[in-house]
Length: 394
Ligand code: FAD
Ligand code: DHB
Image 1 (tube, rainbow, N blue to C red):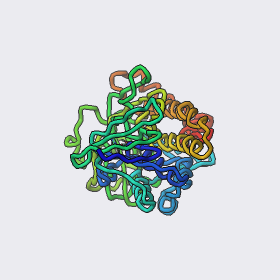
Image 2: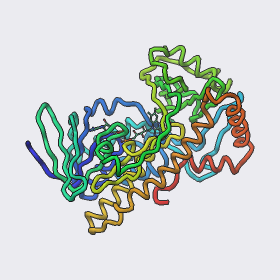
Image 3: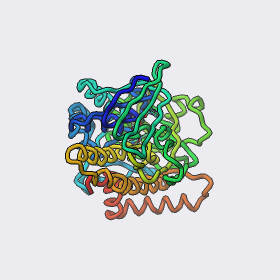
Image 4: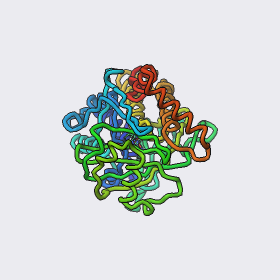
């Protein structure tokens, strides 16, 4: 079996794996990325779109923010539509920070291009990836490519392989604790070449269910509606989607919607999940491999970025000065930020969605909480602080 060597083997070429690879490369640490899908498949997945300033700063430190700085839309506020009107929360006035709208696909493309320009190695379509020896000093990764087995010896493994990946699944059950909540609905999302519903993103709470009007650019709209888990994409022709969205948002916005054919349409289930700890010997988990948040707070990709920040610092410190306190502290530092984002995403999911089985009392509590948010500057401040995210080094 042909076997090569590297310092850090990274499993998964999503944003977490690619960003870690880029930060390590810039610090002179050698890493190889193994990805089970093709590059085109990874780029075709439409996911996150909203970045915290901390994430943008980290991308700048990785030297991959030039296009982002030129093209991202800067949002100084975010809206919540309820009761026929819209509340705007002025993020910048309340926190001094803004959010950046720039698609995950574009970040992935920028990172892939930087990696190719640096001549760093990514092996796409690596099948049957397995990890070995994480308890010892010489871990390794094996995979099959074009029907042939391959091996990679390394010093550390970074499991950046998402929720369904192989890395977390390779940890003995006795060494890991998981915490999970599934929600009884999903988000149906569509992407269309139409003018966004408004210039800023807004969420909507309505008796018929949650909705979200977002965007990828000034000419590309990204919108979501809450749907029952049993629904299929085929149940939702474009016309039905736009009609439902119109009914859930404030009348002013509904009157302005520009509809058009979808260029992507998918349903994502909602889940909260955390695996503790995030380190097992020489294996580190980062991003969705270790935790999932429901998308309501726009935190998933931003958490993947903060994990990678802590992990890259720990590994770079080790290679520069032989100090292991950075990677010893990785799990604790990352989890502190993870649990805070879990709390906010859970709270916002519960505030804005319909939970049919919980009846009228929850609906009344949601109305009361939204009214309170409208009246109280302190409540808006707390919302804004959470939405823009904790500093990575806090
Ligand atoms: P992934 O992107 O899942 O990447 C993991 C990679 O590992 C994949 O390429 C996969 O193919 C590969 N892989 C898996 N198994 C293996 C294996 N066995 N061997 C080799 N490779 C493997 N987050 C935000 O911050 N803001 C938002 O606005 C936002 N909106 C979202 C909207 C939706 C509809 C969804 C679904 C998610 C959203 N998120 C958002 C969450 C965000 O997209 C994820 O948190 C982010 O993709 C996590 O990145 P990752 O690199 O950890 O994992
Ligand atoms: C988007 C996704 C989110 O989960 C969110 O909270 C806000 C915006 C988006 O895809 O643009």
